[in-house]
Length: 176
Image 1 (tube, rainbow, N blue to C red):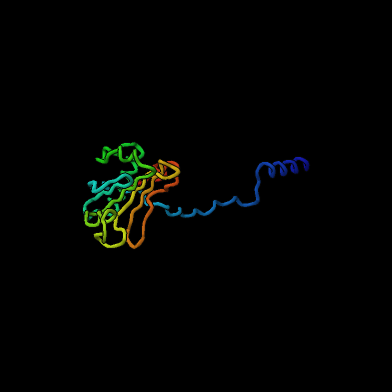
Image 2: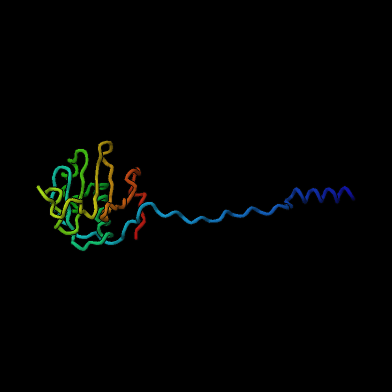
């Protein structure tokens, strides 16, 4: 009988009697802030091609375009580059295809300062750069490299996506 009790006690210990408390889950860490702003859900403002040459296109929007609208326009340029559909934006796809090695899109709020890159002599708005945003397509080592930047004055700028990611349209899918 003693053997039976000792055997039953040993069996219950093997079967799962645990004296150590169960491990607790690690505390939940707050998610890190995104490195890039979410894609805005507002519509891009209407624009016109102010000037173009072999390596750049200057676009002009309404004077009171918001940052979110400028961002949306930069995203539209990004999407057109990925789908080869600049014609839908009334930008000649041949200009973009002929880039060697890159094409810059400079976006201005209103036309007052838009001629600054082409003006001879004193620029119309002074010596600094007054664009609201830039989109760059192409590069010396990667013809499909693209970069979108919101320019906020005083040398402040916001990168809109990771230009070095293999497919940056996927890395920035959220909208606001």
